[in-house]
Image 1 (cartoon, one colour):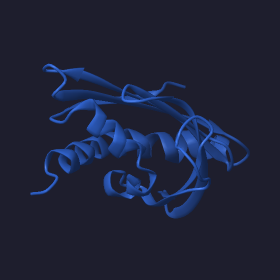
Image 2 (spheres, helix red, strand yellow; image 1 turned 90 degrees about the vertical axis):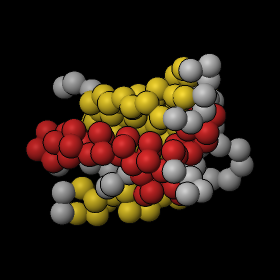
Image 3 (cartoon, helix red, strand yellow; image 1 turned 90 degrees about the horizontal axis):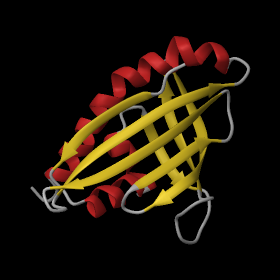
Length: 149
């Protein structure tokens, strides 16, 4: 199966974009399916950090535990699901342009199905994310570009 990939340009510095994307509790602000998100551990955020995201998946609400597997501020991040029938793999990149004043953001999502998840991935998850990811990136852009207005 192919990775779902989407990019957008944001009129904010890469550090601002990266900090916002990595602020786990803010995920529901810019990810349409996210109901809530919380850190599961303490200390500095980085490789090995875990958090739980509760998402609308089709008509259900499902908690998913994610682990940070790549963390290179303000350039790249990676996360993978560690439990449940559907386990996402997410990779993100923030590339500076306009002398570091703007950012080109790319997010890639793929899935691994376990048990009933093998059916959910092609029938529910991929179509939902194909539709949602461009909207999420637009929300990300809108949130970051209109802070304080």
